[in-house]
Length: 205
Image 1 (cartoon, rainbow, N blue to C red):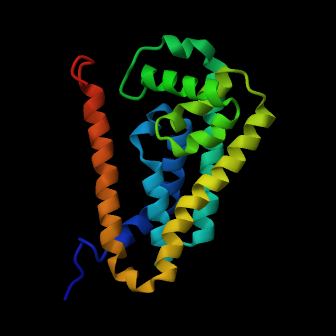
Image 2 (spheres, rainbow, N blue to C red):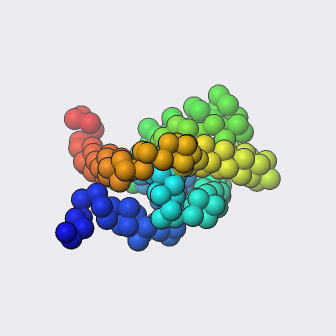
Image 3 (spheres, rainbow, N blue to C red):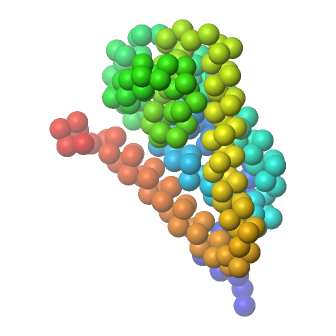
């Protein structure tokens, strides 16, 4: 009986995207303004689930995503350092939301340099916190300390959660493809919803 494209080959589709796809999404989620369209937490968890089935190597998965998060952080920092306060005068667009920048600014004002570490666990704030750190003129070495430690803890906490749940309970492997399918549907639905919402007039959104 031929393999269907529903659940049987879904993990192969993720494997096809591979490490380059993981790198791009995590990099964008941490360093580019449109990253708020990409639910990175769900992707990291999914990567751990896929690695547990043997389709990806868990060590390489984590190294790629940690590197992407660190480089994404530095990109966001340099954007803030280069453009400075002018970003607060920029108009909203599909890939930039003034309200999200202000939200990240408030988070940074409250937590200081620790915001770079803590923002990992707050979607939207995560996408703008590093830019705010650059605007605030946070020393780069101090920034990197929070960036590297935050990236390691964030990536490992989500990827290893998915990985070890499957390893500890191998009987769940039969359900992994279905779980991945659900997570991917959530990811795609979130992206489409955010795109749709961003196009609505402010009075309706």
